[in-house]
Image (cartoon, rainbow, N blue to C red; front, side):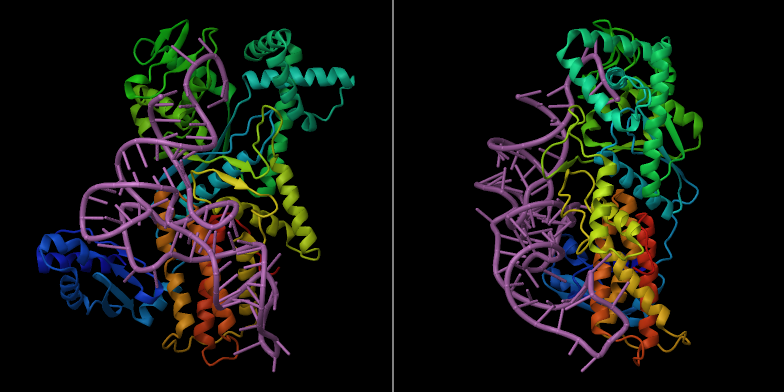
Length: 545
RNA sequence: GCGCGUGUAGCUCAGCUGGAUAGAGCGUCGGCUUGCGGAGCCGAAGGUCGUAGGUUCAAAUCCUGCCACGCGUACCA
């Protein structure tokens, strides 16, 4: 539809000598297929009334190819109606997405659960969103590397190891299943750290030993705990069909991070009260500690080190996107400001993108006190609900993960989401299973239909036209989602599309009707668009349910 | 205190680079058997878009004040 936009632009220049950037929008269906507010924009410059300008523009634009009618409405909108043929063409080719990101390599970091701690639904959200954004970029031609980063060192690990040791001693067994105890061990260690000075000293000692790797007992617990944590994460990711290309550990980011910070003391960083800090005040940011007064690197330094590792592994990357919860937004501004002083070109291509908190309608969760909703528990809960409703279904797995993923992805990125486990991850209405069901119906229709020669398509009736119009919007929606890095646009669109299709399906007989060929062509296009959209969201599209 | 974010129907949310009567889902109420899958479709009720101002031909959308909530604010991540 670039042609139409340019035509409007040209007409404005012709008639009024004005350079404008006209908006070409999708108005409510009753008004037409496209609309522009160019006349309203021009009113001031041309010193004429909007309707007058609109009339002049409309006359000029009447003979554009593919345009059936141009009408003026309201305060001066110009509404375009496409010919059925043009609309049909757009609908039938909607899945052919342009590839503006061809040749680009993009790094996307997301997920980032820490070993020794529970992987809760906040991590699940991050994984699902990050994966969707990755495949969204891939749909536009980019070569995406999915990355994750995990805190395998630091105080939280020391707390967990302390807790593990106490639990093991209590049980007097070496065969404890760590997977079940890691979360408990962490909250036990955390509580002792707060309450008992002796325990605090011991945990601090463990923390130092983790860095120095000089205590065989600690090393062993650390190695075992890490391994079990990652096996557990893998189990969850496997269920979600999400994979990562490279998993970075905090311990490997220490050295490059410290090196970068130490080399820039006095230039980028200052010493203050025994610590090395970045003075963010000058850029109206927070001041943050990079190396503690005990000489240990903080998260800041390690994250700086991580950027160096990514640079080394992917020297040709065009963009690097880091996705985290929005509690880290201010922190990332400081980290990226420091990076900009050290390696401006890396900072320039790096963006931080944040999503909101996942909270439960039943109350707040906190990993410190052990009040978390584990990812695995959510998956099992939804699985159980699906099982109960559809005990005979052969695609319960697809429905379960479709429900979970869509449940998260339909929200606009950025604000907090409240999860009512009973309702939010729903199986009807605005949900993943609704789309899957609509898809299965289309598949079943196409299976029953005989292959026919491509007959005359002819004029579209009302519901055919409505479906065709919706289908034709697909590339525009993907483009918007990519530009804004907002996968929820796809969810909104696919839902509206499926709704439109279901309505068409109720109204129109397809097989055996005079218009069978034309309708089947639309059903086929619909099936392809739905499959494409669900694929971007990494939601399975079973042909039978 | 300061900074960032959020506030739209009973609940969960779209809409926010200003535009035509504010949209969905859930829940509530009422319909749809013979025609391709009822996990569906059609309809009804339900809104001072937190609040008070401002800018504009036009504000849920932009600006300012206030209120409420969330997050951040030097050695956690």
